[in-house]
Length: 317
Picture 1 (cartoon, rainbow, N blue to C red):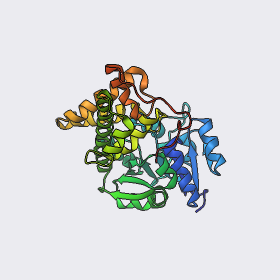
Picture 2: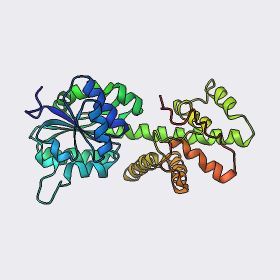
Picture 3: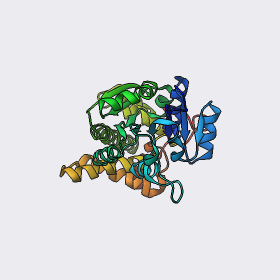
Picture 4: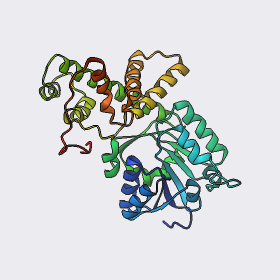
């Protein structure tokens, strides 16, 4: 594949997930161009052998596939539709007809559906393809992708999907179902993290040794993937932000917004949203999402395990 005939893959967003996916594509032999406003992020990708640009519009001349690994709908809008300079066309208007936009952020299903229609009006294809699995799986190319779009969109994105993911779920032939399933996943993830934090706080308040409690629960029916994955951060006192509290403030707000659109009550998700919002309001928004337990420290004065410098900063598996 030649980078001179719009056959390269552009990856916009070189954060933990985007950098990992871009690197996995690079190691799979794909011609990848990374894009991020952060010079440090671009330098990191270049140190791994990749090329990078500073603005999304620069990708249009060389990329027939653009993968958006950004945070939210506002960033998707900016990447696709903001002009790089007065009088200059944005990325969506510069891409060659038939090019593919693979949208991987967690967004409202209604937004994903509308975005697909807007891109179709510009003669572009869209794969609604939210991702799950964390930074480690992004780096190893083992993400789960919850995708929906036309068969032609899947075909154009197949090489990127093969490099990014261990599992691609084909959920429909239009934009929207992919984001709908991701929203269900985020609903459960947020509720499970909040529940794990509350359960551990309850045990500590009753005077149970937290390490013992973790061992018992992970071998009992009350265990969950999130309990098993997040509680070790609490036990180590390590709140390095691998997935921040504010991510779940955003995602559970999207869950809540979608519930309002559907007139569908979700009191359990609402309770979890309030706990993450409280944690963010208390100043913990940029800490790891397991820091939602600090709400209970503020409310009841429980003593949380202190940080062990030898453990701090360890990655999540």
